Image (cartoon, rainbow, N blue to C red; front, top):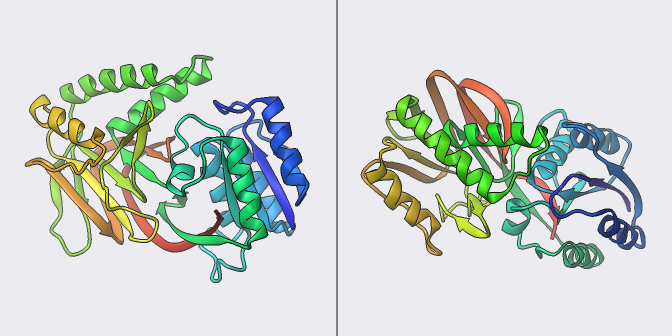
Length: 312
């Protein structure tokens, strides 16, 4: 089987020695090429080129950003659409190498890269894979979450700090989230949300869209906005119409519980919808799978069932 291993050398838990061990293990069973990404978008470009050249499997070694790029490269190679027969299309395998690894963990992959590689090889030997649904926003795919406003502003600020050589630690995320929260309180955004079968909801201050559960992790603890979201049920929407502490504090506690199922007077939630349309009074930051994509005034998030084949 022809395969491409896409490695982000800057990923949090990736080392040259570990990368070489994993590449050697994969090369023992696959006709393997290895790509080290050098810039943002490189993984997507290389994946699309490899698929066009006939590669059958792409293995992503890195964090969720690397996985997102590889997924977009796989589907861009199919003219931006989910394949008509995903069982016949090139497959994805994921070796977790970042800090959160939300997509890999949602698939049930081991968190240790060596164990994850062994699991992939065992799955290939058994010819075992599954189809997963994805989310799409405009012309970009996402695997596990998307957001407008507060969380996207946090992602943008942390990305800027990383570009300046500062570590994207949990403490930095927490401090950035607090700083952005205070800014949002002073200048609250205004969004209108529409989902199929319901009247539009205005006055929304924060909106998350999930393609699986949990939404993300905070220092290893799962953050749950839509506990019934999965790769097979459509998108989950979690939104707040108020950002005051009496609303935020209990909702955050619920989101961080092991059985988190956040509810409340100002909570707007749907757990399995085909699409979510968000309009804003002024452009707001947009993030997909933890990558900042600039600002938008209107976004439609669409659920695409069985869009991708994953080796697990």
